[in-house]
Image 1 (cartoon, one colour):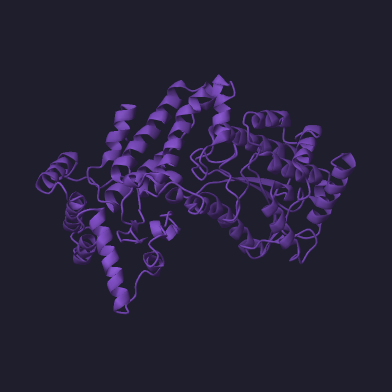
Image 2 (tube, one colour):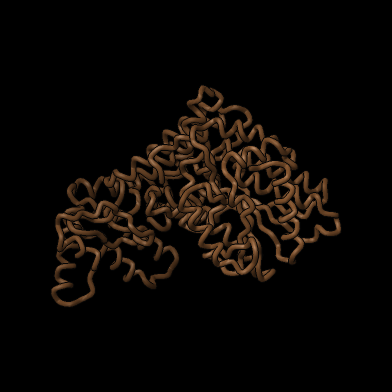
Length: 505
């Protein structure tokens, strides 16, 4: 039971641990109840220490995935600003950091740019890029500077049976009291001061003890009451951490779960103030639905090769048409937020300028889509030119030449579904080689392109893939063993077409 005596004792434990060595502390703060309670406990304990004993830095880290729920993002950002003011005012040894993924790892660059399939439970490509990598990069830097660090997390055994089992197993591996090893990062120790707390304990503490950086914990409770589900998105350091998609502290684009109940509850609980987020929920639902719409994706993988099982090809990236449609819808929502949302949210950015620039380069330079559609889409939505100051790839070919080539391919061979892609990619490779004056590797690139685009359609590709694997097995050559797991048992069909992330890259 949480009472003043229990909090007093826990504060003493924290103070003794803080003073026991020179290892820096890193606290994960997501803005949710657990991370808030954890940070508040540490803040209260260290504030009790004499100034001369506050000689060890405590790093407070928050990970902004760039696709956070706008309501939660606003709450977190304002909280971080209040922390910085309080730290300066009270001379506390805290240092606040907001971590973000590299732009090449962002959700939109991978989803709309490269065409990665919408994330699902067994292919959560977003978790590593948006959450794990930024945190691990920061922690590895601190480990390199200090040799070891102590990570303080708001994880609790009461969260789930799996979480309790995992925490108990790590407790058995402790080499220091209270500090568990991190199974994925060497020289990092994990301290979980709330490990034995229940949900009620967390709320009792937050509502009985004043927030030390000036935020009202009653406002946090109001934020939670705005949704039906009670949970938060924790600082994630391993892929086994349960998805935070079913909590209000998850990414608004998350498709790991079938329905974002918390986001919809924010809108549907009689709160017209949040109606402006409805188009965001509708777009997320469209992404989620696309997981079962194979026709929206190429039947080849990202690198152009075939992969599959009996009677089934594993589909790869989204096709050009759908990437463009979704970008236009996303920009339209961003414009409506800028023009119509409540004043406090009008500065919300759903997709950044840097991400748009990165997507444009992928489409034109990597996917050879020389019609350069992104600036055109941007102007259709905003009525103004897309300013890209570093774009130096101007060319004589554009949409007019693109449309003409497409029309010719469709008129001459209407049943050849890959002919247009083969032609525009080959033309772009040749043009680039001529423009740069470097023809080295051109023949190999064209050969690779033709070898991945000579199929008439998906059925033709599947027939080829089946025959080549059968022949390879008969002649004792290397073949796709996973294919024969289903080929020898036709009753079995591989429902999941994205078993491994590398299959889509």
